[in-house]
Image 1 (tube, rainbow, N blue to C red):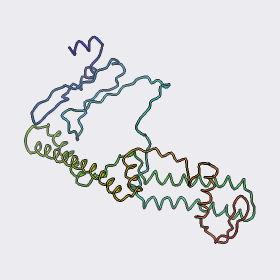
Image 2: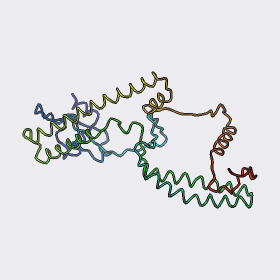
Image 3: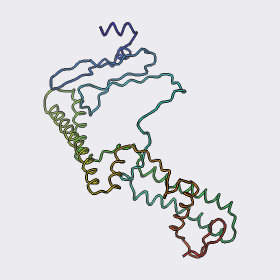
Length: 295
C-alpha cells in the first residue's frame, strides 16, 4: 500500500538516489535486531544534493539520524515569522573577565589621549559644533573598543544555551562514551566481548547522569522561585524568571517621565554628577559655558 502511494504521487526514495547509503537505520544491540526502516522521500529528486545516514558517537536512540541537503528556489517576498527569539546575549558568567579587563583597558587608554586633547581645547575656545562632533566620534570609539574586547573574551549565545547542571562528571562520562564507541566501530562493531560491554556500560551511565542532572535543573529552578517569593525579594524573583524565559523589555518610562527630551536631560544630570576629571585644573563646561571649577 505504501509502495502504491509512492508510485501514484511520483515520490522517490533518497537512498535509491544515493545507493551507497542503503544501510541499516535501526539497530537494537540488546535484541540483536537491525533493519532499514527509516526513509526520506522526495517529489523533486533533481533538487537533492546529498543524502546520508549518520552514525554519531552519541546517540541514545535505536534509530540513526538521516541528513538530506537540497537546493530549492526561495520566494524572497515570503516573510517567515519565528516565535523563538533569535537574539544572542553576552554571557558574562562564562567570560574571561581578566583578559577582557586588560584588553579593553589597553584600547580605552588610547582613547583617553583624545579626551585629554579635547579638554585642553575647551579651555581656550567654545567651538560647540566642533566639540559635539568630537564627542560623537569618541563615543563611537569607546563602543567599538568595548565590543571588540567582548567579541574576543565574552561568548555570545541564545538563552538556555548553557546548562548550569553540566559538570565535570558529565564531561568525563561523555568522553568515555565517545571513546568506547569509536573503539567499538574500529573493531568491527562486535555484539559481545569486553569492548562491547564497555561501550554499553559507558552509554548507560552517561544517559542516566544526564537524566538526573536535567531533573535537578527543574527542581533547582522551582526552589529558587519559591525562596524568592517567600523572602518577598522581587528583584531575585524576576531575575530568576527572566533567566528562564524570553521577556520583552520595552521601557517607555524613566523616573516617572515619558517625554524623551526630559528623559535625556535626566541622563545628562545623572552622569554629570557621577563624572570625575582626570585633571582637577580643567574646568567643567556645558553647552559652551563654564559651570565652575571641578572638585
